[in-house]
Amino acid sequence: MNIDIPSGTRTFSRVETFQINKILKDINRTFELWAYEEIKLPYFEYLAVHSKGLDEDVVGKSFKLVDRSTGEILCLRADFTAQIARYFSSLKRKTLPKRYYYTGTIFRYSQPKGENLWEKLQTGIELIGSERLEADAEVIAVACQSLKNLGIDDFQIDINNTRLFSFLKEYVDLNEKDYRLFMEIIKKRQIFNLEKFISNKNIDKETAEFIINIPKFQGDISLIKKLLKKYPPFEDIFNQLLEIYRILDEYGLSEKVVFDLGEPKEFSYYTGIVFEIFIKGFPRPVGQGGRYDTLISKYNGDVPATGFAFDVFNIWEYMKDMDLIKDKNFKDFFIIDLTPEKKYAYKIGKILREKGYTVGRDIIDRDLKSSLEFAFENRYKKAIAIGLDSSEKEIYIYSSKNEFEKISIDQFLKKI
Image (cartoon, rainbow, N blue to C red; front, side, top):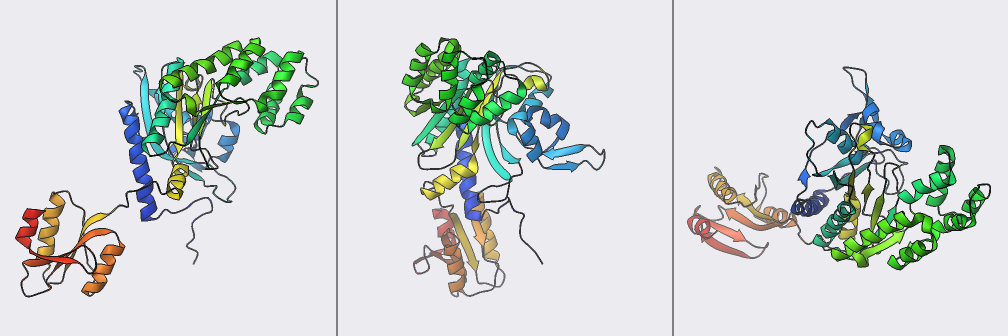
């Protein structure tokens, strides 16, 4: 009988699960310190509703099923931002700003190879109701502080402004088909194909030069200042980048910033400042986000917003490889009661749990040596052995398989 799990999925061990949950707890605590409030969203959405906020390729990758009662097509959540836009639009009272955070899984099909999982665990925030750049900067600052609170400091923030591409679309007068091709070439950083693409367009020499060099425009704030002087038509776009840099400098984050104008983001709903976060030596981004001022209007209302999400599995992989997850998830006591009635095991366990200790009991028939091996292999700090001699009211507290202290039950419970 085949008991394998599907390609694109994986099981996490109890140790791995503990590590991931600890990362989530620490990140979510940072979110809460910035006054973000958690919301829980459903795994299922109506496909027709969810797809309003998704690009066609993401809709194509979504997992679909049929509502048995209505026959309507449902899908598993493929994107949190679109889902939160739908949720916010459903609210009758929309006091602003809204600060939400969320944790959960998104589901997208991908070719089952390497580390490509159909399930991606994300945690992130959405700041709804402000079009000011200080909102964009806050979101970036929260992301950075979350990483720092995990003990990760060797990261960089790659920032861009998607207004650059929407401006070029109008400036060069590109239809939708040409614009999609243009964005694909930019994403692949194909300078030769860019030259070929614009060769038959009616573009002035200065703009043509700028477009051809977009994939090369990577650098610090001096790059943006230089481009601002050289290409006046893009003044508003570059000024936004300068301003976001200024605010991030107030947060003490300017040294983390790299500008990458040749990196369009995954979703077309982005309308302004976008960013990705990379950790030195790790091959994949651990977080990304940006501004999406028109997404909510696809559902109901016209409200600006920005946000970001962490790829939790990527953060976990990095922290595991670098041995940054220090807490090993020790449990407190393992009770081994060799008496027939086990009454002291019940009593001691109950009192210890009431005091807040984690307590497990041995419910397998085996000798003391085997029970102690189990206890310390499973990361119990101490083992309590009852019934080793004639006095049931005397117990043995083991701190290892060979080290123990003999003490009365009453003394132990007073001492603990």
